[in-house]
Amino acid sequence: SICAAMPLRCVVFDLDDTLWHTIDTLTIAHDKMEEVLSERAPNVDASTETFRNAMRESAASNPTKAHDFTFLRQDVLKTLTKDPALAKEVFDIWFAWRNKPSFFPGVLEALAALKAAGYKIGTLTDGNAEPCKMPGLGEMLDFTVSATEVGASKPDAKCFRACEQKASMKAEEMVMVGDNLIKDVQGAKDAGWRSIFCRPPPNGFVGSDRDI
Image 1: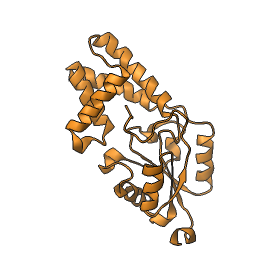
Image 2 (image 1 turned 30 degrees about the vertical axis):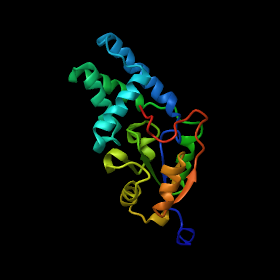
Image 3 (image 1 turned 135 degrees about the vertical axis):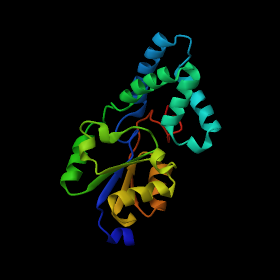
């Protein structure tokens, strides 16, 4: 096949439950958000389930923004607090912790080895983490692509085309590493890439619809 004939030159990683444990990261971020709300807006119910349901309602009311988790969270916070300034403050606190994940053992070392071997390294996520700003990870990345940036979620081919464009490479030179068989593995194959399945943790998310 063409893929087998062409050497790989770029490795693209999913983020949540591929490079770090999503539930651990988001639980800490949510707890920090709740702490602030309990002090500044004690009448607001920001429990995990309530907030998740509110985000789903926001997605249903804003279908063109359903892939944009930053918009959804900010929309819900504005609705719950009825205070745009407080909503922004709370979001900023949540977002700071969202971008402080604990990487799975060996992740940064593996990426460094790939980088040293001459591969381009990229990330492709449906979530709203900012890997380029994460110490230890950001300096190894050649590019990042998010669903918000593309305007669509994986497995939409637009996501993979955006990676090819940023990498300045052909589909046959790309490989996707991710924990979701539909979004990452099948999405990559449909786009003409190769793919590697990364088994998620036992209590990991399946897809990103629970990415609160």
